[in-house]
Image (cartoon, rainbow, N blue to C red; front, side):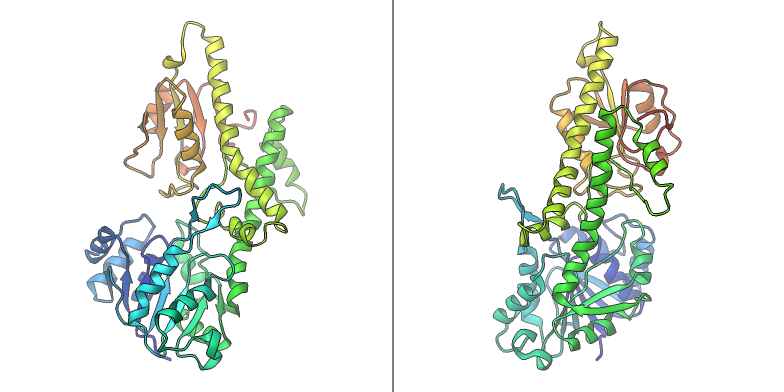
Length: 423
């Protein structure tokens, strides 16, 4: 098999780094995205996202002629689909996955498919999504055969290979991490391995498409359950006047215990989303997964209530002041430390919700973004927030906050950034 031209559909936080890695290995890469701004930015040799090292790789790949971006797919030897998989806003207790982006991507590449092509779904998806994608392709191209009906003899090979990278370390982890390769047939897996071995140094482990889909969901659901335990523990400790950070430190001295850190909730495009894909398919069986999701989804509301209570205590001790006189500073908005990604961030939810009811000044310190569009909220630097605010709310463990020094009795520390005597 020969993969000289590779098309990556979706040039976001996963698609663009993946395209860049193929291009860095002297493969011709055609990136596809519906966002004209993203396409234009990439074709200038620049990037529209923040990811260490990626800007240099993209710049070199574009200048050397190995990477270019378009809005309409072109013929290629392999197609990787890395588009969003959000939820439908149907108001249901259990969110329903929205596969419309995958369907649109499938319909977009269908006209340019040719015999011998490989199509890989990288988007994190509910079980069965790869098969569904293959059905959409088959419906659009009845002149080609697909694995479901022709098995190993199919014209088009189809596989699922979920990304397993950490924002902020994507470039390194794309190369070093093991990959789960889930082909719809063994021959599909073999083709996918050959493609990824263009740059992947980790082991490529083969399975079927459904198990590969479930593997990614399982990894993130496991993390979600562990975080839910820590978050629930922090709420229990608050009620019992116990320092949860000291408690976890003591418990983790046991050689077989490793309790994670609690926080203001769970964010990001994976851990906060993927467990619902499991629940949506097996709602009666996924009881623990659902409970964990509920605990983590409710934590931002609990934090907001703690902030409101702290404002109340401040006013009790300062009776000459009213709420409009109270300035509250929130430290960190990204969904995890040291990145600019605000997607599914519980910190955003806390600030937005609190701003609806607070009459005083609201300051936000987020060193990884240069502008912020939240009503009644002002983006400031850390020194300004420490000086001006009466209430301080620590939400993200950014490296800039590790040695933060706040001389105040009115602090809500959701990440244990301050001394052990504070909770």
